[in-house]
Length: 366
Image 1 (tube, rainbow, N blue to C red):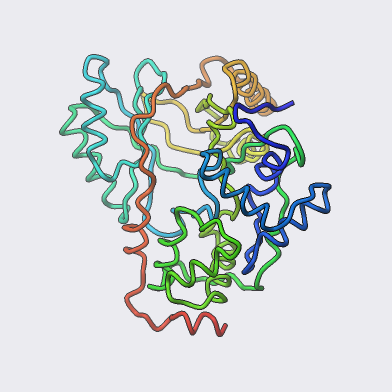
Image 2 (image 1 turned 30 degrees about the horizontal axis):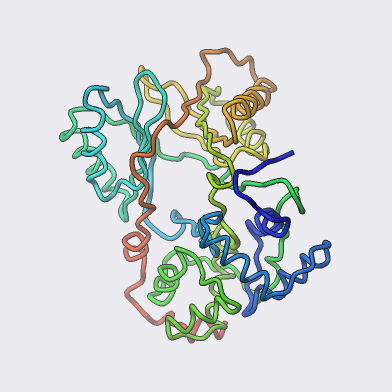
């Protein structure tokens, strides 16, 4: 049985479980969403559902409502970096790192040496080294760049006890029929749309129409573009994004593993299939400092639950090779040092076409 810290009604719990992905991309999306809940025994009108999502958003139970934009597919790059901050200088080093606008997230993690972990996000991949060189000069500490070499899962979903306990109610088929294109760049209009929706949609009866009005474009183009972005992977999913702390998921552990190179492609999908693993990647080792090449992030509502989940990851690993205590570690976060979000504007700008022939009207005609 899953429990939460927030005081949620059965409808609230159904919303959290059902709509973390697969929300309709239609002009009035709360109507089919409410109908789908009704078919599953939850009697709610579109107006009531919209109002409740808005209240959950305003109360902080949800981080936002709308698309989860895949920053990597929009443009630029981001990388995970680790470093040692001497305990007597920890706050000073944290401030020096955080002063770099390219640093989006920074966490203190439990590790005898690499105790600071941050994300560098830039429009041009070549700038990663420039940023790290500057941080090394300022702090006097080496950095260890751990870019993502293979993504096995990015699926941060958090379920609660109550209706629809198995999760997603997929209504993503509702909306315009589109074909994923081969273009990786953005048109200026698409860039403006990404900027308008990256922080969420307005929680209204007609969120896509409201975005279209804000941008001065046709709602059909907004619907088609959002749907196509889902197909192309520029948007991972559309739905509610819970605040996992409000749901009681206060413990997160970054498990790291020294997986034999020949087994990574087998181990990755197996670990990614565990429902409590939210992120799963292959990353480079650093000889003499960092022996691990596989990362799996887990979340739990207590230290005991987190330990149980880490143990389950180890059991899965043990199906493929003889895992010893020296082959893995868990780095629990002890403090959030910075969390500003990825700067999508700069990354999207750098990936936007200067030729505006691929306009709103052209896209709408396809």
